Structure formats: C-alpha cells, structure tokens
Length: 312
Image (cartoon, rainbow, N blue to C red; front, side):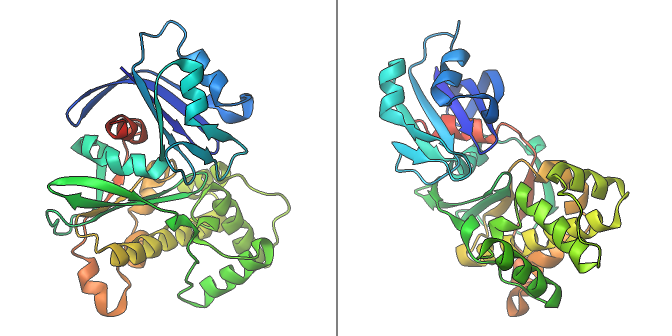
C-alpha cells in the first residue's frame, strides 16, 4: 500500500494506491484546501485515520525538489521527507508535480485523453507534459531501454516570447507589474486574472476590480463577456505557442500532453483553433509541428497515479 499525494499551491490531494505494473488503483481519495491547513503533516495524519498499513509514500510537490526537501513555489510550505518518515514510520519520496504527471502518462487510459491533433506518433521519441494550474508545470520524458523516464524542470519560468504587437504590449504590461514576463505569469490561474486586466486596459476600460480565474473562464465559456473571451483567446494561443516552442526543444514526436487543473475546464476553448494556431506557427517548422500528437489530459488522477509509479 502506497500513500500518494499531489501537493499544489492551492490544494492537496491524498490517496492510497495499489500498483500492478503500470496499472494503478486508487482509493480513499480526498482533496484538502491548503488555506485551511497548518501544514502537510496534519493533513496526512487526518487522512491516515482508520487507513490500512502504509508501506511507503510518494508525494508530488509543486516546486523543484531533490527528492528529500522542497519549498513550494506558490505556497509558503517547506516539506522534508525525512521528517515525514520519522513522524509516520515509513519512507517518503518527493517528486516534482509534473514529473509525476509525466510518470502518470503510462497509467492513463484512452478515455482520459482528448486529441487536439492526432499527428504521427513516433515510438521511443521524447514526450512533453505541461499544464497550467496555480503555476505552469513542465516535464520531459525520455525513452530509456523501452521505458519512459521523466526529466523534471522549471520550464514554466522561461521568458514569454511575444509574436506580434498585441503580445508585445501584453509583455510590457506584465513587466510593469512583475518585473519579468515569464510564461507562468500568463499560463496560470493568476495569469488569467492578469490577462483580463490587460485586455480591459487595452480596451480603454481599466478593470475596477480583479476578476478571479473562474469568473473569467466561466464568462468566456458562456460568451457573456467579450473582454473575458478576448483574454481566453490570448491564453489558448499563448499556451499553444509555448507548448510548440517546448516541443521543438524536446523533439517531442512521442506526444505533447496538456495537463493541469485548467485545461479540462476550458476544453471547448482549446478546441476552437487558437491553441493549434499558436502551436503550429513555427515558420520553417510549421509542417513538422503538424506531425506532433497533442492531447489534453482529462484524467484528474494523473498526478496521483504518477506518484504511485514513481514510488519505486
């Protein structure tokens, strides 16, 4: 029995996992709001009440980790696996949250994927996983002797490369607010709020109150607010641009997988053409981009399943 967790900037998800090869079964799944918790130790203690004996744990964490400690990027928590091991009496491993997503790709069934572009999958070629949530996660997977092994990184913090005048103005807006315009400043929940503020300002009607990401996405999906729709068109196009840039870096003919908390909720916006326009617009490599398979991951448990596969 493996305790698995997916610890993000906003929520912590915990479950118990049984593993049979690449098949993972989950039970006792529970999501906790981090804002209501004093820390991870208390959440685990609460989760393990009346649970069967746990042999080990693997926790996917939203930040760079050496496998033993992490200071979360978007939450003021520091997690030490040795401290947790002493507290609960079983070994604990930490992995980056998108490293866990990359592991979890092997456990996702076809009904947990939605194709944006079929492409021509190439066996053994690198795979790319990225996705917006509280931040922007990125991980590569490399085939080693027939088994994909994730290579975690902090690709969400690369600089945003504007491709036209509108995006150049957006970059200046972000630089004025944050000092640096990384792609995570756009492709995240907080980034959606900033996109809405930029579009309101560009329309000559500066925002009077900050809109939450949920408010912006819901208005765009409903077609009830043209500014929200504009902001989300930019979001989808820039997500496509960024995924395409990273696919070029990786040579990701094994597939690009868009995961994270936001993409499944905005699937109708991702399928309306803006994403693929941004993804394919690569000059001399535009035709090459059409050969790369692209899928949205709709399985909400991919991080927990990946943590189970990464547990060793």
